[in-house]
Length: 421
Ligand code: EPZ
Image (cartoon, rainbow, N blue to C red; front, side):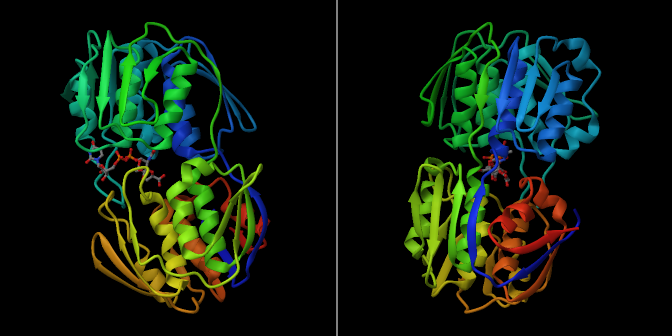
C-alpha cells in the first residue's frame, strides 16, 4: 500500500478489535531463542517487522509455523553453525528491533554478529547503553567491518544501574541475564508494559525474575528454559491511536481488547480533555459528544508517564480542541515531522524548537495531500485526515504498515470512508 485516501469529516461510530502488540511480540520472539522447546505465541500481529523477525529466527535454526494469529516457534536446533552463516541482511536492516537478538543470542550461543541498526527519522537511536550494560555481564565487543561482534566465554550476573531507562537495553539485559551464572540486578530498568510481557513470557518458560513491572529487576540465571503457550496483549499504541481518532471527530466507539491497564496516562489525558472512557468487559468504550478542551500541557516521559508514541496521534486532537497546548517531547529528539502538514491542513501549530511545539485549537481542519515519514507520525496524519473536511491523501504508507496491520480496515469498521492503494 502506497497511499491512503480518506474522505473525512464524519463522527466515528462502531467497534473494532485491537491487534496484538508489536513492541511486545518482537522481544518475546527473540526470547524463544533462549528456550530448547516449542513456544506457541498467540495474538501475534501480522506486520512486516514480525515477518522479518520470523525470517531471522529461521536463519538461526528455528522452525516456525504461522496459523492466523498464532505463531509456533521451535528453537531446539539453534546452533553456532546456523548463526555463523549470518542473518539475512534485508531482515536485519529492515527492522531496528533486530538489536534485541544481541541479548538473546549471547544468552543462547555466547556470541553474535550484528550490524549497527542505524538511526531513523525520529532520532539517532544509538546503542551505547545496551553495550555498556552488557559489558557488565562479561560480554566483550569488537568493531568489525560489518558492525559488531559480541562474545562471552561465560555470562556472569552483575549489579547494573541504567542511567536512562532504555526499553531496548533493558530487554537485552534481561535476555542475557536469564542465562547468566548467578544473580543480575537491574536498577533503573524501563517499566514499559512490553518489558513486563517479556518477563512474564520468560517466567512461564522457567526463568526466575522478581520485581516484574518495577524499575528493579532481579534475575537468577537458569541453565534451561522450556517453551510455553503465551498470549500477547493488545497493542496499547494502536488502541490509543483509535481513541485519538474518536477524540478528533467525536462519536462513540468500542475498542475491543484494548489493554486498558497499560493505557492509564493516555486515558487520563483523554478524560481530562472531556472524553468519556469506560472499561467494559470487552475493552475500552469511548464517547466524545462535545468539543474537547485542551489539556494545556502534554509532556512525554518514560512509562508510566505519557508515552512518546502517543505524542503524534494527539497533535491533530489538540489542533481541534478548545484552547492552547504546549507539547514537550522528552524521549526522541526529532518527533515533530508532521507539524508542517498539520499546518497545511489548517492547524494553528508552531514548532518552538526540536523538542517543543505549541498548538492552538481551531474549529476545523481541511483535507490535503500529506506524506508519512515515520510510523506514529503517519498514523497521526491519518487521524487528521479522518477529522478534516474533504479529501486527504496520505503518502508513504509503508511506514504506517510497520505498526498497524490494517489501519484502513479498522477505521472503516468505525464508519470512516478510507481506502488504501
Ligand atoms: C522502544 O524503542 C520502542 N520500540 C519505541 O517504539 C518506543 O518509542 C520507545 O521504546 C520508547 O517507549 C520497540 O519496542 C521496538 P529506548 P527503543 O531505548 O527501545 C536513547 C514505535 O513507534 N538511547 O527506550 O529504541 C534513544 O535514542 C517505536 O513503535 C540511547 O541514547 O527506545 C532514545 O532517545 C518508536 N542509547 C531514548 O534513549 C541507547 O543505547 C529512549 O530509547 C539506547 C537508547
